Amino acid sequence: MNESNDPLPPAAQARLGQARQAGTWTSSLTVDEFAGLRSIGFEPVGQVMGSTVHNLGWWARSQINCGYQRGVLGGGFAATVTSGFRAYIDTLYQARRTAMNRMAAECAALGGDGVVAVRLTIAPFQGAAHHLEFQAIGTAVRAAGAVRPGRVFLSHVSGQEFVKLIETGWVPVDLALGAAMGIRHDDWRVNWSTGRFAPTQEVGGWTELVSATRRKARSRLFADARRTGADGVVVSGIDLRVDERACKLGGDHDHDHIVESTVIGTAIAEFRTSHRPTRPLTIMRF
Picture 1 (cartoon, rainbow, N blue to C red):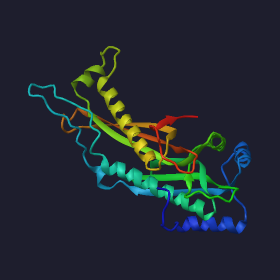
Picture 2 (picture 1 turned 90 degrees about the horizontal axis):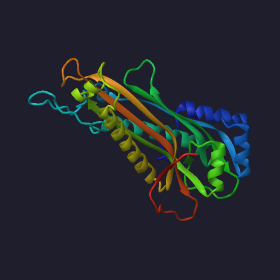
Picture 3 (picture 1 turned 45 degrees about the horizontal axis):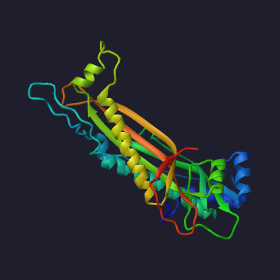
Picture 4 (picture 1 turned 90 degrees about the vertical axis):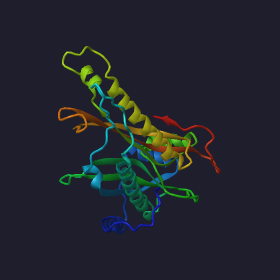
C-alpha cells in the first residue's frame, strides 16, 4: 500500500528540491530518539509528509437506513446496523492510501528506507462541508549498511520504540487502519433507559452499538495488517466518534445514533529472511 507510481505533487517536489539544495535535513525527532536510532545503525534523512483532501460525495448527504421496524401494536424493533457504509469506509482507506503513498515517495526520493514517528490526522476540511483532510508527517530514516529493504516501511512508533523493536527482533512493515460505522435507532427501550426518571442502569442498545462497531473496526485492522504478512499490530490510537440525527422512520421526535470507530497502528513482523505468519495476529502496546 505504500508503493505508488504517481508523481509527487508540485509542492512536495519543491520542498524536496529545497532540502537537496540546502544540503541539510530536518526531523521531528528528539535528541534521545536521534541518539537511539544512530545506536542501531540508522540515520535520519529528512522530514517527509503526504496529504490529500477527499470529497465524501453523495454519501454524506444520503439518508442511511437504520433498520428500524415498527411494531404492529406499537413499540417497534431496533437493531444495530454496521452495513451500508461502504462508500464512506472506502473513501477513508483510499485517502489514507494516497497520503501514505505520497509520504513513502518522499522518503524514497531522499534515499530513505522507512519512516518513523508518523502522525496521521483525519479531520474535516475547514470551510468545505463533506470533505476530509488526511495528513501524514514523519521522519525518513536510512540504514547504514549496504542491504536495503524491499520497500519503504511506515511506522507510527517513536525513535526509542523503533530501537526496542529492532533490538528484540521485530521490524515495522506498514501503517494499518481499521475503520467501521454503526447505526441504531433510539427505540422505546433506549428512551426508557435514558429518560429523566430512569434508574441508574446500562443502556443496552447503545452498548451493543458501540461494541459491534468497535469489533468490526478491529476485524478490519487485522485484515489490513495481514495483507503485509505481519504477525501483530502495535496500536497508536483508538478513536470513537458519536453523532445523533433525527430519524424519519420513527417520527419527528425520534432519533438514531451513529458511531464511527477508527483504530490506527503499525503492522510489525519478526525479522527473518523468509517470513510467513504462523500464529494469529495480536494487538500490542508499548
